Image (cartoon, rainbow over all chains, first blue to last red; front, side):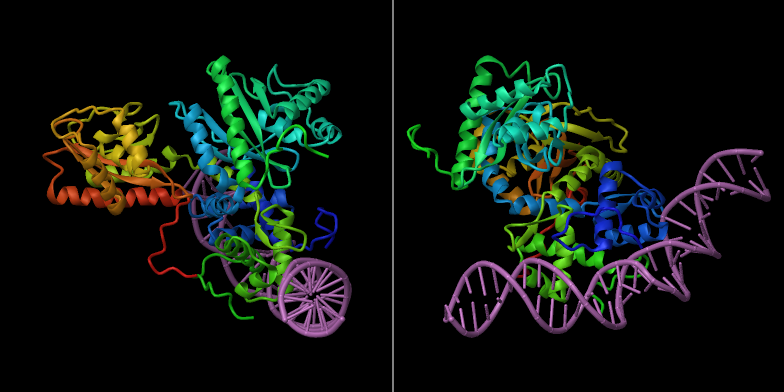
Length: 269
Length: 269
DNA sequence: GTCTAGCGTTGCGCATTACGCAACGAATAA
DNA sequence: TTATTCGTTGCGTAATGCGCAACGCTAGAC
């Protein structure tokens, strides 16, 4: 049989059925619910092949069948695996408590994001004390130019790389989404100088967020912590104190990851 | 090669490499970090086989390598997949059917509450079969120290936090409302030990409720499920079976949210 | 009510595919 | 230095997973 299309660059071996099984999971993640025939179609394989893959995944709890002879969807086994993932990511573990404190202090929702494939991947979230429960962002990937977290992550790249990444996704979400590369570049410079980023109504109208960088022992930006809430609430003094609190939290997480703050502006080489 | 141990009953087909790949994920989830040789050992296959499986998973982001030629761990791709699962698995939707069954089984009213701003927020309710229809609690926020649900939610906090939260609202509703912080602290300890809470005439005279905790995949208490009814009806054996049923329901909802009950006191190393 | 179309499911036999083997290069320890 | 152990890779084989076709079932059309 011919190559299955992927044609990924060399380096790592692959196992056909495992690769296809992961594709099944992604198809289900995207579609929500699928029948065997539909999966087979998207995969480009025979019905029976798709059935065996789904069946193997079902036995292990990564996929569930809604009813006997019914459609398939992702299973709770994945949640357990993801929980194990975050539990082992020292980043999440170190930041959990501090993010919780930040959520209590500001009363708003706190998110932790990392760079993943030219987007901001939300890996952890602590809900604020507000009555209206916010959307759960964990697991979502949001374009970098439209969020405060994204700007922080972008600010860690050279301008050329940042431009390239954003250039590939010039999507606008609201009238406030930064559409001009020049404006974005200027904002990134400011983020580097001040250490934080703000986004007001840029991803969703009515949603404001502030974010600060988390650095590891090498000084690399490995993540971004944000505080987000309704725009009407995050203004003036409240916004200012949110910025301060977010920067302090991100700094403390960085310190726990081994980062040493520059002693003064008299350093560097 | 011999069977890979599972030997699950017939019914569903399986695909060897997919099954092994899932085992790899579970091994990594359990161990945190593993080398290829170690995985091969646990899997009972050759090093090269384990390598190809891990490699296939790595290409798709379900597994990450800490450094070039380093150990492997679970990857963030899993978080994305799990997010698609949790999007579907929202608390209310997942618990609805089970709460309904609990209401039928006990004949009393079932409520689902979450923590919101230092109070118990009632987010769902299923009326019991009883003729006298209870008050609809959905949307209301009740102080934590006066209800069984509240005590369950409180029991998930450190005692200091719980004391602080309750200290701010020393409100009494009836003669039975717990007014002493010492008594409450003792009750919370019991809730943690037994896994359920009871409140008799503490919020309203004539109203008795029992509640148990709902946990997510991280083990955090995310909600509480209660059965409540007239005090004259919820005594003795009826109360006992209500407690059992509530605990079972809360446990099952937790399981659907990805929670794994502690295996027992017989852990492995 | 009957018939058709489409679904998820299963046995079969072939060849594709994934396996074990052995050797390689690098890193760590002695 | 040497020796051991790690992750990684090419190769030949046969085990394994694939496509095919048929089955039972449900649901909709007529």
